[in-house]
Length: 487
Image (cartoon, rainbow, N blue to C red):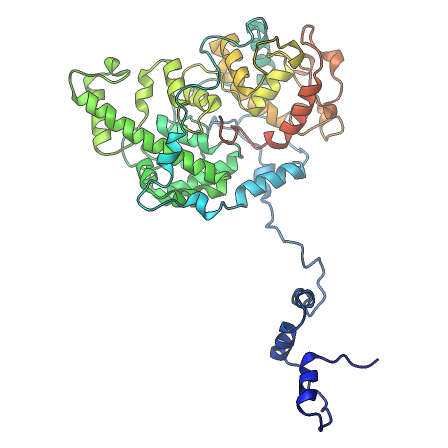
């Protein structure tokens, strides 16, 4: 077969028609690149992607960083820094690939430049973001009223029995009398002394794992420093975060996932808190006026509040002076703060009884029949979701069981081989059983037909609920989470 003639050899032959062609010398790397530049795009691409030594794996396959095993294997402690509790030995199956893909994208995909950089001289989008902030509680929830008044579950007896059974497996849960100093390594969900600290930590924990939110929080500490004195001692300098460009906040928390939305929310919240602090201080200095809740403050407390505002130490500790409903409505006006986040701050920071509903609590409330199935929801009543579940159980669950139930349902929802979101009758450890098996009716095709073990009066199986549960399971094991915007 005749050797292939290159364009270079043809050109040389054209210039020296009277001379016979010489034997070409071996091509050097430089010559190879030059000749490659003259090839067609398809050939050029192929030559670039073909290494000198045949690869052992597909060269076009993107290599991924190895996943740290510690976060998956480590037995998760109770949420909100409660400490270690006995739990079943975990040899859970690895999360579904689809769920891992979503989590990885959320942690690695960077937003476009225009999404994180704003015009100079502005608060990096905080002002514009606050214009879209909620003007009030727009979740359709009425404090003290359940959206399902004719649904008789859960009864106090049912709550007591679930606590009793779960404590046998996961350990006894009691609400601490005093809140421990804030951790600089764990974000948590609000069990810290500072109300503002609790709010931002809980926002960071939304829709991600506890490990991811803790890494993001540690990065905030490293980037912006900590407060040395006062109620927020040992936690992040939130005023430094407020004054920083959003891009810097984004870079600090991007390891925690959903950094674009969270950085915008955090900046907007902190700017709003700053303005509120200044307005309250001005009213406190005026002896004729008292801001909301200040009528119950001691003179020394008023003086401290004024001093914090003058020193630009951001604080929401005046929420201690408000009622549960007032504090709840106040928090849910901030962007990115929904019922679950506000309820967590009430429960863990303000130490008020509140039934916070995350994805695990919601799933188990449905399994237990504590909210009506879709087939039992009457005309005019809202669909059953996390917010309506919170509103219903806030009324039905006795105050004394709200704290232990929240902790135990989360722990059980993550650890139980039958009550986890991503599980089924063929899953490993299914045969170990469940301490509340006789009380629940699981839905979803892979959960198996549990109809024979259901307590009477739990309602019919739900085809729509089956579908929504399968969709929810893709994200529910991400931890104690909110929706992305929680709105």
